[in-house]
Structure formats: C-alpha cells, structure tokens
Length: 345
Length: 295
Image (cartoon, rainbow over all chains, first blue to last red; front, top):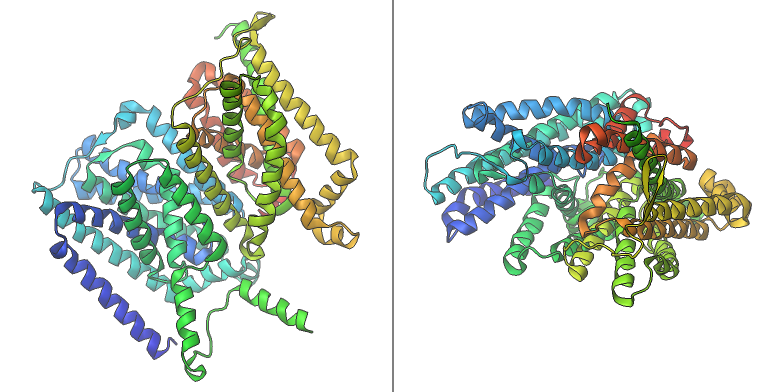
C-alpha cells in the first residue's frame, strides 16, 4: 500500500498539474507564448506515451518520433485525400498506426534490447525515405498542408488546442497510472528487472511487451495527429526525425522513467529549453551539440532521473522511522548491494 | 530487360560498395562482440574521417589518402578513450540500452560540431585522378572506387591477421568469447576491450577516407550509413565478422542491382526490408553468430 505521505504528494501533484493546465491560456501574455506552451505540452504527451514502453519494460525506443509522424500524416492524408472529418480522421489514423505497430513490434520485440533500438531507428530512417520519395501521395519535401478543423481566429485556435492536448495528456497519465497498479503492470516491470526470471515465473513476456508497445503507439499517434491538426503543415524532415525520438528519451530519462510525472517534468525542462534555444540562437547546429551533451550527461550521471534523485534526498532528510518498510529496489541496485556485501566479507 | 553490360557494371559497383560496407560492419561487429554495445556513433566517426580527409586535401593540398597517417592513430586513441572513459562507466545491468543512448549522443554531438565547423554545405574532394577509369568487359570502373575497395580489403585483411596471428588478437578473441575465463588465464580484459574499441574506430578512419574519395559529404550523411550498417550486422548475425562481411557483400550487390529498376532512393529500402525479415523469421541472423540469441 502506498503510504499516506506519498498519497498526499501524489494528490498535490495532480492538483498542481490541473491548475497549471486550466490557467495557462489565461495567463499567457500573447499568442506566441501560448503556441510555445502547446509545443511543450505536445512533447509532454509524447514523452508520457513513450514511457509506456520505456518506463515499464525498460526497452528504450528512439523511433517514437516516427510513430507520431505516422499519426500526423495519417490524419492529414485522411482529411485531405479522403475528405473525412478532422477528428474521425484522427481516430482512424490512431487505429491504423496501432495496427501497424503489431508487425513492427513482433519483429522488434522477439529478441532482447539491442534489436529493439535498431528497429526503432530503422523505422524512422525508412519512413523518412518513403515519405520524401512518394511525393504523389505525401507531397514529398514540399510538405502537406492540413486544413484547420475549426474556423477560429489564431489565438482562439491555440486556446482550443491547448485544452485538447491537456485532455490527451490527462488520458495518457490516467492510462499509465492504471497499468502501473495492475497485474499487467507488475508483469511488465518484472520484464524490466529480469526478463528470464519473469518468463520462468509464467509471465507471457512477448504478449505483454507487444500489447504495451501498441498502447504506446496509439497514444503517440494521437499526439502526432493532434499536432498535425493544430500546426497545419507537415514536412517529412521534421516528422520523421531521429532527433524527435531522442528528445523524448532525454525528457523521460531526465524526469525519471519510473515515475508517473517523470516524463512530464522532463518535457517541461527540455521543451522550454528547446523553445528558448530556438528564439535565442535560431536553427544552428549548436542545438545538436547541446542535445548530445545533455543526453550523455543524463545517461552517465542521472540514469534514474531528477525526480528519484530529489526523492531520495527528501527521504534522507526525514527521520528513519517514517521511511517505508518496502520500496522498489531495482535488480541493478540489488546486485550492487550484494557485491558490496561480498566484498566486505 | 537491362543490357548485359549494364548488369555487369552494377555487379562490379555492388561488389566494390560491398567491400566498404564489410569493413565498416566489421568495426560494428567488434564493438558488439567486446561489450554488447551497438555503436550508433560509428558512422558519425566515418563522416568525421571523411571531413578530415577533405580538409587535409583542401587546406594542405596533399593527397587525401595521406590523411590516414594522422586519422588512424587519432581514431584509435579516441576509441580507447571512448571505451575507458564513457562506456565502461555504465551500469552492467542496463549496459546495452544505455550504451545505445550514449553513442547516439556522441553521434549527434559529432554531427553538430561538424555542422558548426564546416557548415552544412556539401563538400567534395576534387582529385586529378577523380574521373579516371578503365573499361572491363564493357563496364566502366572508376579508379577511385577501386582504391576505396582496395583500402577496405587491405584493412579487413589486416584486421584478420591481427585477430588470428598476434597475441593481442588471441587475447581480444578470448575476451569476446568468455571474459571471465580470459581474466582467469591472466588477460587484462578491460585494457584489451579498450584497444578493441580503438581498432574498431580505426577502421572507421580508413572507411571515411575511402568514402571521401568519390562521395559528396555533409554533416547529416551519417544517418544514411548507420541504417544499412545496422541492417548488415543483424542479417549477418550480431557478433560474427565473416557473417557481417558476407551480408555486406550480398546487400551491397542487391542494392546496386535494384538501382536499375527502382532508382537510387527506393533501392535503399532493401536494407530495411532485410532487417525486418531477418528479425521476424530468423533473429539469430543468416550467417551464424552465437551471440545473437542474447542481444
């Protein structure tokens, strides 16, 4: 059972998040700030969707940018070529991407770790190739213009989409929270800690991994499609960029993949930094350098993220009696501890 | 139906390209064997070496091939440092995943620095012998492509000799096969692993110089190489150098042949199709590779 204090922290976090989401459009001084806020919020949804796979199973995908791009292009093409209603197209695109995620997941998840990352990167590269070359359908490098779903002024358009993205974020967080507490979630976490042992104990590892990958793909596609409807202009170079995928990984790792709000916090930090960089320095190769350095630093020194680091600091400040008797210990931590004990003996 | 001469030309070009792929895939295989690391930054170092060769020719006016005198030792040192200072620090439990992220970060860093130092402009070395070539049974073979293939062949042969005939090579192979047993017979596996990474990166220096001879280079070019290379090592069965070489020749040849009916862009998809097919039907690869079960 979660302790009273951790429940209080969780409740406070939800309250804070809800207040922030509801009040930001009123507080934003101009439409530009609101649109930058939507970009950050969009990253938060994507990072949370990524965390279904990355956080529960420990399989890190660098290709989630491609799934978002597919959602975006799927929505855009269904609106422009098939003439569907914007939100029907969005839902249909989500279903199509989920269906596509099944064979991709089957190829990527049959073996462990490294092949999953390889497939995820290959997915981005092959889709970039296809969407740039198949100009008769996708518009190629000229881009695809997606008509706006509502006939509104620019600030009103931003306001509506802020709340749509907020709703999607709430839905993704709720789904993650539900899985986290379920038997399914326990099985996934067992895969993360030791896949062989999990399998030996009867967890259907392959089926679990595949299901959670498809769920993650569905949310990612929704976020990508909503972005297409909001932004209104798609370009293969930006939609199928390995960089987008690496931003998501950076956000989730920085915030902490084991935490419900981790990717959200990471997206706030990285997303705001990205927008600030764009305004201050424009599109120079330096943002690549900054991304690379930051990712390397997080991987080397803070692989568990900011939130767990802050949490352990808080725990140390509290008296010993209040500490929870049982807490999550990762297989890696356990191994380190055992090794330390052996050395002492 | 394309003419016989055109087919023959494609076969020759495919084999020449396959040689370069084989050399680069050998480096990737070495890293994977030593540490179970998928080195995303390999092709970024390849492009870095190509840029250094271009700069060498442009600024110093010397033949780009001579740049290897500097780049090969430099890359060897960089490889040792990369392994000792960065990859060896990661936790063993999550090494495979985190090392991908770390080498990815290095790749992005190199791309950014190249863009900053040399701008995004496309560069190409202008050589006096750049357009020289000779006919062979109706096919035309450019001298530079032959030089690139020769370089790859010499480097691969050298790698083979080092691995099979020297004490260092035995130690390296022992480290790959069974690190614990290697330590028991007195091999300093950590030092050997560092040197193994150095050798792997040195092959990227050779490959990059060969690439620079007849290719237009730009900072983000490495993404066009890492996809095919990863496909090759998966098809070859991760960890098997002969398997990677065979897959490299085969896929290079296929790519070159498919360019006739499909065009250059779509022909590239053969790598990704091979990758997906391999993982879906035979995840341990088509050319052996004992390590593949656990990757």
